[in-house]
Amino acid sequence: MFGTTRYHAPARAADESGRIAVVLVNLGTPQAPTTAAVRRYLAQFLSDPRVVEQPRWLWLPILYGVILRLRPARSARAYASIWTEAGSPLLVYSRALAQALDRAAGAASGGRISVHLAMTYGEPGIPAVLTELADQGLRRVLLLPLYPQYSATSTGAALDAVADTLKTLRWPPELRTVSDYHDQSLHVEALARSVERHWQSHGRAERLLLSFHGIPRRCVEQGDPYATQCRRTAERLRQRLGLDEAGLVVSFQSRVGREEWLKPYTDQTLAELAQNGVRSVQVLCPGFAVDCLETLEEIAVENRERFLHAGGERYEYIAALNDGEDQVAALLALVLQHCQGWSAAETAHAA
Ligand SMILES: C=CC1=C(C)c2cc3[nH]c(cc4nc(cc5[nH]c(cc1n2)c(C)c5CCC(=O)O)C(CCC(=O)O)=C4C)c(C)c3C=C
Ligand SMILES: [Fe+2]
Ligand SMILES: [Fe+2]
Image 1 (tube, rainbow, N blue to C red):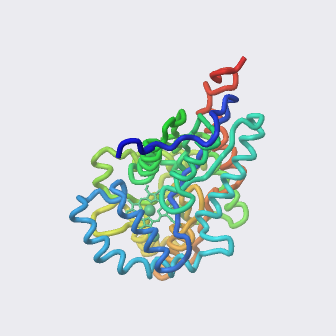
Image 2: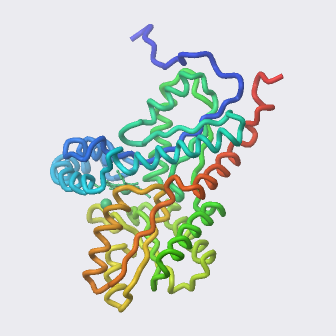
Image 3: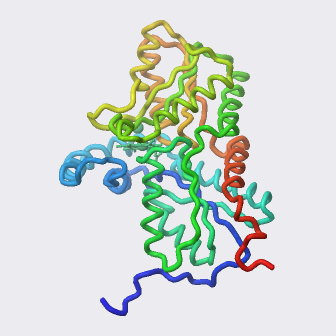
């Protein structure tokens, strides 16, 4: 016990030029679209107490005894249907976004700001990315979770992983975090332009459906601001697009388990719209910075079938902002805003 080194020491001396590392954090995704890889991923993801808040003694037997026996094979088939040659869409688009933002932030800061990508679950993991930045002597880190709306289940979980890593470092860097950007004007503008571009090429549908990832209703009752932030983003987008209240519908997708989640549910909403005579919908998922399983499979394929089966005739999914220039511009503005006060003149040892 005595004399052992418990804390990681940086491999290189501290950087004195005031360089800033922006770390984009996304959820993470399996390494491969196979049952074994999906099981590994889901085991890490679903055993996080931020994601499932049940007492461990109650949840872990259900997770290992039921869910991890049944779900991985089904999810692996879904992943296989969207997998690309470069890998999982979530990772491919997140990487492309980080690279585009790295170029833009580097150009805007004379090379002082670099952008990196880390995942809460799976690879590249938060511990390895933060430890590598510490090894490079970087002393300033801005954490930017790629979740426009804050939820303890997503953003909170990313912060936990960061906190766990900081505990292992002998000299943790200065850290700033972006909690959310649901109300940022440039973000709303990027969403609006993406819808308008879709309208220009496809024409308008009778309804624009905004489908956000759901969370258990209990989380919101206990103070999670997620639902309020989703509704705020939706309302600003509705006003920016000049839609009346009936023209834009908000719903919540991806429910897991039997507990009540935020309502209305996306699948039920689409069936009801079709049953009530709505023939055409366009679906946007503003809570997802990049496309992933939940948009490309659940929304673009599964829910399309549900809507058409219920009598709908035209269903279009509008892609996530991904590495498009409007999203890069919005995130760059967010980065520069949060780096204020970390300007070169204020670095510890500058002349
Ligand atoms: C069981 C509880 C879950 C909560 C709470 C939850 C919140 C939440 N998730 C995202 C973003 C994403 N989730 C994705 C996949 C996914 N989500 C859950 C469960 C919960 N999510 C599961 C089990 C899965 C895995 C897929 C499956 O088996 O169905 C993804 C996509 C990942 C990918 O690899 O493409 C994203 C992104 C947010 C933003 C959020 C809270 C607001
Ligand atoms: Fe999720
Ligand atoms: Fe799903």
